[in-house]
Image 1 (tube, rainbow, N blue to C red):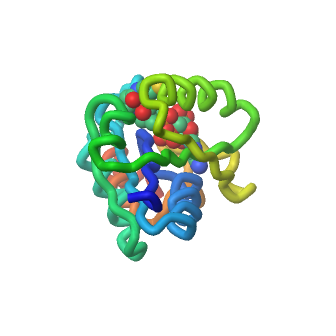
Image 2 (cartoon, rainbow, N blue to C red):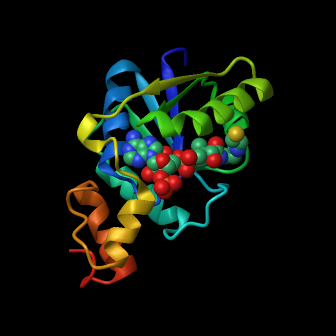
Length: 164
Ligand code: COA
């Protein structure tokens, strides 16, 4: 599993920025496990089944990408899967402090795990899941922010009138 990586996140919902990171990782690693967190500090809008389903559907054409959920600590899950590389996206300087804390905490917990950062395409670097949720909640068009596969999930959750 030396050439495998885990890309963890909440994906509430999956955005084009997340998708861009998955695509980049899938070109570098022989296998990418997109791990959707059950235990996150955030209170989520989409239940875990829907976050997994929308991510699976958006990535089903990528043969080396597996989408799954995980409970508990990320480092424990990674070790159980025999994977030593965690991939995260770094969008702007403002991400740094949060990512720095997470990477070093994970390293303290499990020194064999390395975190690698990839930068999404510039046009996606200002996206966030919470911004997408706000756009939809306030009646905006989210089609330019999320993969097509996520749209039915967003429509169902927010009502067709809102998620155009
Ligand atoms: N494109 C678009 N948005 C991106 C992005 C990208 N490439 N990269 C990050 N983001 C945004 C997300 O949209 C999200 O925005 P929001 O907070 O406004 O909704 C935010 O950045 C981070 O979301 P995400 O990438 O989904 O990751 P996360 O920070 O929610 O994930 C876990 C955190 C799940 C990895 C972490 O909580 C975890 O490992 N949990 C398991 C328990 C554990 O091990 N805890 C110890 C960790 S120190």
